[in-house]
Amino acid sequence: MTSTETASPAPDSTVAAGATDAHKVYGVGESEVRALDGVTISFDTGRFTAIMGPSGSGKSTLLHCLAGLDSLTMGAVHIGHTYLAELDDTEITELRRTKVGFVFQAFNLIPTLTARENIMLPMMLGGDKGDTAWIDEVIATVGLADRLSHRPSELSGGQQQRVAVARALASQPTIIFADEPTGNLDSQSGAEILSFMRRAVREFGQTIVMVTHDPVAASYADRVVFLADGRVVDEMADPTAEGVLDRIKQLGE
Image 1 (cartoon, rainbow, N blue to C red):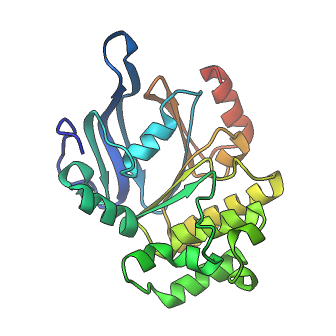
Image 2: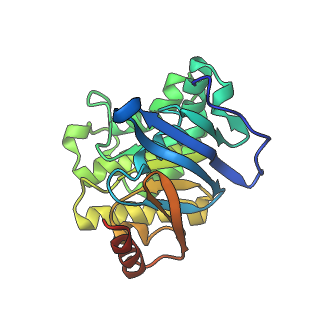
């Protein structure tokens, strides 16, 4: 982490992750771009939050900084009680492996590994077999028990994303970050993935933060946070697709 990223007092135990006065600046002088401009936000444990906003609003930047994939210029981010600014690169890598799940739009599966091996990868990297009962439950829930020996090229897009979601859940992370997880899927496959993510929150107590541009996808969440120009400008509880679309139109997307 950069020397300008600062720590804060221990966060509330009911908060899975959060940011305090988060700034992210790219470039200098006339070429300076403020991707994040003083974002303070928290994500409660066991809740599903969607982040929305116009292109360039800072959605993915915020997600990447929260997940430890990028560092802030100023401010602080934390996962559980751990502030990322206090960790070195090795500790950040370990935190991402054990405390964070990440679901990418492009799936990011290893093509030479089977579905089961891809699901088990975070534990395999740490020499951990994981909780077998939990992993079996996750595999059963995503409905891929009969596809575990198949490699990604032998799976449909929806099946590959199910593997990616199962991989994120398998290590029982503190929080899962999802960046446009249904962006490459047809509407039916996307709905199946979103339904499973919502079930993971409501039945398993998982915490999920998802960036999306799709009002229908956002309607699966418990809460929608709206960003514009690197700032949080609004939020909505118990969202509907129609309500989210109206708010997005006001933001100019």
